[in-house]
Length: 528
View 1 (cartoon, rainbow, N blue to C red):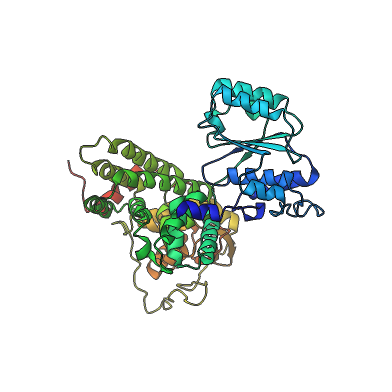
View 2 (view 1 turned 90 degrees about the horizontal axis):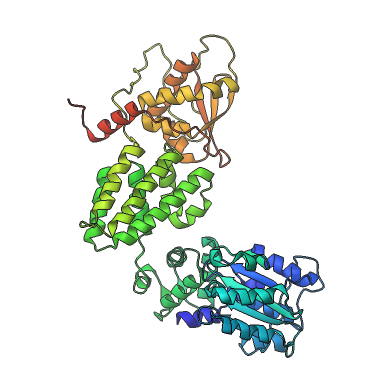
């Protein structure tokens, strides 16, 4: 079923290919202008369209009724898919398209035979196209023989080389080809493609199932369509997650997200319990550790680039919110250390006498790095209740972003500008850390952007950072710190916008703070 489904919906035109727009547009323009290369090199992972685009290119080069040839550049040149040449290529019976699997025809004799074929002019068409799949499998002697052909190719011969391992291709071959690097298909595009196939098959599949199929395929579209075929083989017209679980591989991504969130939040006890639960359920911990490492890598890259869009398709918005919150106070260097710890655990699992032990050790080691304290420390100062002479405390506004806890009083009378605020912002963060580590982390990802009178406006990329600071008990602490650092009463106003990506300095590695945080989190004390 899976193979049939993939062949049934194999793209026959450039427009039908999912993704790879950078390649499709270039090839279409070359066809339109007639500036055809004599050799192309398609590189990239499996199942993302290399051979498919090679065949579409071959059809376009010999199409007898090319579509869009009288339009401007990038307008969409396409083969007609109806002329004799197109139909012969689609049916696999064209004498002017030669496809070679280098995995099983990798020797010099096969390449010599190919060289002989290039000497003959096309049987019917303008070009004779040679597609060599998995070209990296050729022997050195075969590559040398192919090189001679690429150096002086006949005018009617077009070569399209495809490989999943570009590093194995000799530079002499690469330099004589026009190279195109294919990319994995984005999750959103995969979901749309799979949903379209399901509709054409007249099967109602829930969005959760479609998303899980796209997520499990990890950007390899052929794998996604094959997995969809297995789901459709159930023969049902209505398929939900429960039904799909009968044929789909067990999906561990939610547990991976849960573990990572616990680890990055320094919830060591809960993380250890989760790992042992997974072990008791018979989960493959080696595979689980591998996915955990891959996800930590993506989180690290998202943190460094401040680009979380790619991760949202794997984590989902709810989990992504938790991940971003957990990493808010961690530096990139901290995440690198956590990643290295789990890499070590992954390499140790195969030899471990106690299979879950490497992950347990990784969790405990990570706790010393993440140091995320969700509770207040013993040093936290609780503001005194207002006296009768003081104005009543106004709770955070629920309908707008203006927050005021008490009437602003300018103690010095001297104006303060935004540059002074920015210069002293690190002092604000450091002072907040004396009261509450988590509160300092949340304000650290904000950016002071303006000051009007006695009100500082701070920009936040994500609303949940600002929502936490808006809580009255935290806001009172922030205002106390403002007064301490700036020598006057200042109020905080928040502005939430995605353009305010976190640009705060990396969290200072303060051993004293780390020790106090660990003691507070686990209820311990220093002895001896």
